[in-house]
Image 1 (tube, rainbow, N blue to C red):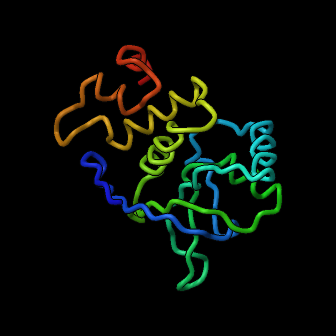
Image 2 (image 1 turned 120 degrees about the vertical axis):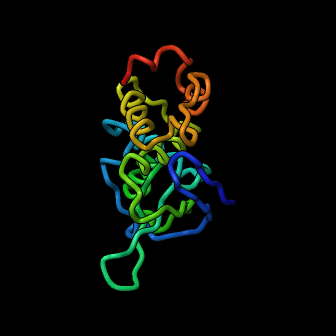
Length: 169
Protein backbone atom coordinates (compact mmCIF):
# COMPACT_ATOMS: atom_id res chain seq x y z
CA UNK A 1 0.00 0.00 0.00
CA UNK A 2 1.37 3.42 -0.89
CA UNK A 3 0.10 6.73 0.34
CA UNK A 4 1.36 10.23 -0.23
CA UNK A 5 0.80 13.02 2.20
CA UNK A 6 0.73 16.22 0.15
CA UNK A 7 1.47 18.45 3.13
CA UNK A 8 4.57 16.78 4.48
CA UNK A 9 6.15 15.51 1.26
CA UNK A 10 6.40 12.08 2.83
CA UNK A 11 5.49 9.20 0.58
CA UNK A 12 5.02 6.04 2.54
CA UNK A 13 5.01 2.45 1.36
CA UNK A 14 3.82 0.09 4.05
CA UNK A 15 4.91 -3.53 4.24
CA UNK A 16 4.47 -6.14 6.95
CA UNK A 17 7.43 -8.29 7.96
CA UNK A 18 8.96 -10.03 10.94
CA UNK A 19 12.08 -8.50 12.51
CA UNK A 20 14.24 -9.09 15.54
CA UNK A 21 13.36 -6.94 18.54
CA UNK A 22 17.08 -6.23 18.91
CA UNK A 23 17.02 -4.43 15.54
CA UNK A 24 14.39 -1.95 16.74
CA UNK A 25 15.43 1.30 18.40
CA UNK A 26 13.23 3.49 20.57
CA UNK A 27 13.59 7.26 20.62
CA UNK A 28 11.66 9.13 23.31
CA UNK A 29 11.43 12.21 21.04
CA UNK A 30 9.22 10.25 18.65
CA UNK A 31 7.08 8.62 21.34
CA UNK A 32 3.63 10.22 21.36
CA UNK A 33 3.30 9.82 25.12
CA UNK A 34 5.02 11.65 27.94
CA UNK A 35 5.43 8.42 29.88
CA UNK A 36 4.83 4.71 29.57
CA UNK A 37 2.24 2.93 31.68
CA UNK A 38 3.90 0.03 33.54
CA UNK A 39 0.46 -1.50 34.12
CA UNK A 40 -0.35 -1.42 30.41
CA UNK A 41 3.01 -3.04 29.60
CA UNK A 42 2.24 -5.78 32.13
CA UNK A 43 -1.27 -6.27 30.71
CA UNK A 44 0.08 -6.55 27.17
CA UNK A 45 2.75 -9.01 28.31
CA UNK A 46 0.11 -11.23 29.87
CA UNK A 47 -2.03 -10.98 26.76
CA UNK A 48 0.90 -11.88 24.50
CA UNK A 49 1.69 -14.92 26.68
CA UNK A 50 -1.94 -15.99 26.36
CA UNK A 51 -1.75 -15.83 22.56
CA UNK A 52 -3.61 -12.55 21.99
CA UNK A 53 -3.23 -11.00 18.55
CA UNK A 54 -2.07 -7.41 18.40
CA UNK A 55 -1.55 -5.07 15.46
CA UNK A 56 2.05 -5.00 14.19
CA UNK A 57 4.44 -2.45 15.64
CA UNK A 58 4.98 0.48 13.29
CA UNK A 59 8.58 1.24 12.37
CA UNK A 60 10.61 3.04 9.75
CA UNK A 61 13.78 1.61 8.31
CA UNK A 62 17.12 3.28 9.01
CA UNK A 63 20.74 2.40 8.27
CA UNK A 64 22.25 0.15 10.93
CA UNK A 65 25.41 0.62 12.92
CA UNK A 66 27.50 -1.30 10.36
CA UNK A 67 27.72 -0.79 6.58
CA UNK A 68 24.92 -2.66 4.86
CA UNK A 69 23.03 -3.36 8.07
CA UNK A 70 19.51 -2.23 8.81
CA UNK A 71 17.84 -1.01 11.95
CA UNK A 72 14.28 0.10 12.59
CA UNK A 73 13.05 3.16 14.43
CA UNK A 74 9.90 2.53 16.45
CA UNK A 75 7.09 4.94 15.57
CA UNK A 76 4.11 3.26 17.26
CA UNK A 77 3.79 0.38 19.68
CA UNK A 78 6.07 1.40 22.54
CA UNK A 79 4.01 -0.43 25.19
CA UNK A 80 3.77 -3.57 23.05
CA UNK A 81 7.50 -3.42 22.29
CA UNK A 82 8.37 -3.21 25.98
CA UNK A 83 5.92 -6.01 26.83
CA UNK A 84 7.54 -8.26 24.22
CA UNK A 85 11.00 -7.51 25.61
CA UNK A 86 9.80 -8.24 29.14
CA UNK A 87 8.45 -11.67 28.23
CA UNK A 88 11.58 -12.58 26.27
CA UNK A 89 10.25 -12.59 22.73
CA UNK A 90 12.91 -12.31 20.06
CA UNK A 91 10.88 -11.47 16.95
CA UNK A 92 7.86 -9.34 16.22
CA UNK A 93 5.68 -8.51 13.24
CA UNK A 94 6.09 -4.91 12.14
CA UNK A 95 4.55 -2.59 9.61
CA UNK A 96 7.45 -0.82 7.93
CA UNK A 97 6.71 2.69 6.77
CA UNK A 98 9.34 3.93 4.37
CA UNK A 99 10.18 7.54 5.12
CA UNK A 100 12.95 9.84 3.91
CA UNK A 101 16.12 9.73 5.99
CA UNK A 102 15.81 13.49 6.47
CA UNK A 103 12.28 13.29 7.92
CA UNK A 104 12.08 15.52 10.98
CA UNK A 105 11.30 14.21 14.44
CA UNK A 106 7.96 16.04 14.22
CA UNK A 107 7.09 14.28 10.97
CA UNK A 108 8.04 10.90 12.44
CA UNK A 109 6.19 11.65 15.67
CA UNK A 110 3.06 12.57 13.75
CA UNK A 111 3.23 9.35 11.68
CA UNK A 112 3.53 7.29 14.87
CA UNK A 113 0.92 9.35 16.67
CA UNK A 114 -1.51 8.95 13.79
CA UNK A 115 -1.13 5.16 14.09
CA UNK A 116 -1.50 5.37 17.87
CA UNK A 117 -4.81 7.19 17.57
CA UNK A 118 -6.28 4.14 15.81
CA UNK A 119 -5.87 1.72 18.72
CA UNK A 120 -4.44 1.14 22.14
CA UNK A 121 -4.30 3.20 25.28
CA UNK A 122 -5.95 6.62 24.81
CA UNK A 123 -3.66 9.62 24.90
CA UNK A 124 -3.73 11.95 27.88
CA UNK A 125 -4.55 15.61 27.32
CA UNK A 126 -0.89 16.63 27.63
CA UNK A 127 0.08 14.00 25.03
CA UNK A 128 -2.65 15.20 22.68
CA UNK A 129 -1.32 18.74 22.92
CA UNK A 130 2.21 17.60 22.14
CA UNK A 131 0.99 15.53 19.20
CA UNK A 132 -0.92 18.58 17.96
CA UNK A 133 2.30 20.62 18.10
CA UNK A 134 4.09 17.96 16.05
CA UNK A 135 1.16 17.95 13.63
CA UNK A 136 1.63 21.69 13.08
CA UNK A 137 5.45 21.58 12.95
CA UNK A 138 5.27 18.70 10.44
CA UNK A 139 3.15 20.90 8.19
CA UNK A 140 0.08 18.66 8.41
CA UNK A 141 -2.23 21.65 8.94
CA UNK A 142 -1.65 22.75 5.35
CA UNK A 143 -2.85 21.38 2.07
CA UNK A 144 -0.37 22.84 -0.35
CA UNK A 145 -0.46 26.59 0.23
CA UNK A 146 -3.85 26.65 1.91
CA UNK A 147 -4.54 26.06 5.57
CA UNK A 148 -6.90 23.19 6.31
CA UNK A 149 -10.24 23.97 7.89
CA UNK A 150 -10.85 23.37 11.58
CA UNK A 151 -13.06 20.42 10.70
CA UNK A 152 -10.41 18.86 8.45
CA UNK A 153 -7.83 19.16 11.21
CA UNK A 154 -10.20 17.75 13.84
CA UNK A 155 -10.96 14.83 11.52
CA UNK A 156 -7.27 14.01 11.12
CA UNK A 157 -6.48 14.41 14.81
CA UNK A 158 -9.43 12.22 15.81
CA UNK A 159 -9.27 13.33 19.44
CA UNK A 160 -11.04 16.66 19.47
CA UNK A 161 -13.84 18.62 17.97
CA UNK A 162 -12.96 21.49 15.69
CA UNK A 163 -13.14 24.03 18.56
CA UNK A 164 -10.85 23.07 21.51
CA UNK A 165 -7.52 22.58 19.75
CA UNK A 166 -7.38 26.25 18.68
CA UNK A 167 -6.05 27.22 22.12
CA UNK A 168 -3.26 24.61 22.01
CA UNK A 169 -0.80 26.46 19.78
